[in-house]
Image (spheres, rainbow, N blue to C red):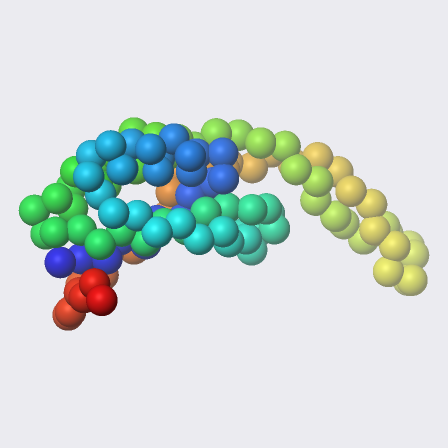
Length: 110
């Protein structure tokens, strides 16, 4: 048995949860916050039998696509020493998924 930890954007989480559950995967959903954009995301925990790992990964890949998004970046205003900042738009790539696949020594339902 393996544990898949999937960190996905909130925008993708509902569709991904539905697809995983339709295919018989047990999923636990955690609301989390990303460090870079400080935006909400979702962390999913899946207990998966070894022979279904590739199937689960394929489902995640099919739902969670990367996309471009504009965000504001802050920079110090030159010539000012009091910590004043201005913002300017920056395009960043968001979406997709970050997956961790871990070995599970023991799995119990009590």
